[in-house]
Length: 229
Length: 248
Image 1 (cartoon, each protein chain N blue to C red):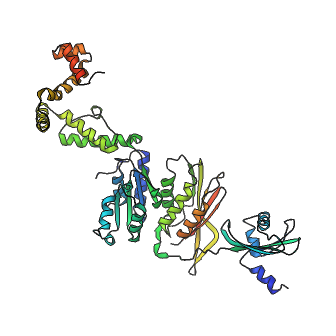
Image 2 (cartoon, helix red, strand yellow; image 1 turned 180 degrees about the horizontal axis):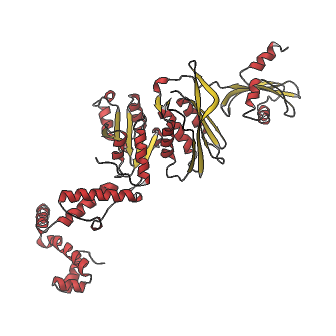
Image 3 (cartoon, rainbow over the protein chains, first blue to last red; image 1 turned 120 degrees about the vertical axis):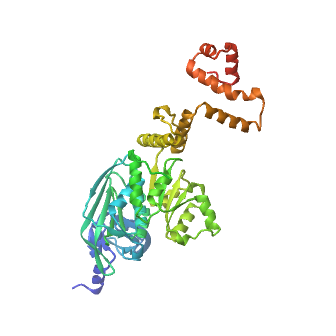
């Protein structure tokens, strides 16, 4: 039977893990397991070593590190012997439902916004655009101005590439809960295999303003948002 | 203000964008050289909006001579001529006004303030539009002056896009339609004005002689022929060509 401390650790909303001195995973909680789908244990072990205290004990540091959709604002690293080292990451809690002002929303067609943004930024740049759209996506309410500015910033990252792919689809099996109501999720993926996004931080601040989620990684940028009709 | 002519791919694209954005509550920037059709396109985005010069609007706001609460949509031209673009747009945003601005030049990267940007390239790069616009202006001018001039007889000037194009077509049609009587009246009026500053006969003679020599050269090519046809001495002709700086 698990002790209270073990249960607390297991169900903690922040990822926690213990590595051996060779970097082998010895223990992790549920959030830790989920985090491994975005970042390898090896990278997290490296992170723990980089922020470890100089001698036995615990050391907490305030950092800003992002793995896929999660941003962490602090971490705690500790070891009491030479055999094991523990790492706990603290999530920066952002929630898509926070400050969701419905009064600024305009019913619009997502393909119209893509067309406008694409033409505002990529026109005459010689970028070949491959579009894979799901035409069944209905009109939805969005903060149009902010959403367009976010799209513009993302497309601006791709102006020097030869080809990009824009994929618009429904995210199967995922819903977003807003004020007790569940909404399906629309997903826009803009990708180019070779490109690493440089201005990811600007995307996140614009995404926050537009109340959508952005994930920028090598080769692609993904925008997720609820379909509020 | 006429209809936005969109025969080339770039302008079809621009017109399509203008139509799409006309229903959305977003700030729009239309960018392009003088005479590329920015204001005409702005009218597609916001058909009922009043057009203000950026400097004039600044003045009206500063002197509280405009009630922003009564405005839903506004078109601001030559936004590059003011230094407080961002502040002005933010002020208008606070009053929930949809803003469509036109600019010939971009400074302080104010373009980022706008969610939609429509670029209009010069008429030189829009051959199909140039042709359609030329024909449209020529028909207009022919109707006005009751002439029947063909496009091949017109010297087109696109240095200032549609502005210089229209001017060059109207000028060509006017010149082609002029008869002796009109030219004499025109000359008389011109000389009357000119005599405010100079009255010397020899000095004013250039007004008759320069076009005469140019026309003769166009028709007869060599100075020998020109002298024969004009029935003047070759030396006199050469002297006059040098005097007016018309030598090759």
